Image (cartoon, rainbow, N blue to C red):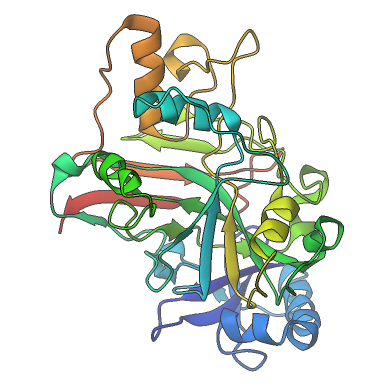
Length: 336
């Protein structure tokens, strides 16, 4: 099933959305918000699925669905944890920051950080930036939402706690990152509010593209209307969501509604570690910093600028028939 949160109050109003993303049905009789549904998933999920089946079968007419009326599925969340599963991204970004030492990460010790989760942007909301010299970048990612996860959960069990998947634009301020990392406490000011896709869907909606830990479909990004990247979200990831969740739950339980990102989707070229821009026949990138580093390696100079006021980003994933799965994230950078 596919779920969305209409802009209403602080936590949105839950609706069930048709697979074609053209109709919706109110779900407040089952759960007023997505967080409420997740808090009581064993009861609410079968009822929401029944409503979804009726909507898709045409047994109920529903209403017209408008992605622009949506907040992020969880407008705020108890937890937002982002990882760095794609080794190619880690390699390029470390070189971009001038750090040639590639710190090891593995399924048992993934790189993660805890991001701000008290205020997410909607999928069609502008990205407000006070100073464009902060180096504004987008990062296209896949995320999952869990139910309650017990402390010490095993990797083999962690995947059973994944309830929903979403797309993410994890906005980064690249020029603020080095000074923050130098303090040894990680990201804070350099990671403003992220935005999530209009739709959060259950894993079964992905069919064979979901293997229980990764999504094996291209994640497409456009910059100012031009295709920027289409790397395979299942390729190049050194670990999957179960490993990430188990690692995060090693010393603490995780609340229902926790969101986990697998990191910026990134693929190396078939002939070597370095991915290539779309313009050079590669699959491109899911953030500008990667393209800039690739340009420097290939040509000796970085010529793609970071986002400026007025620049527009679009992020989408489609199934094998070309139908949009999550709806689209479409945002413009504006003065704060």
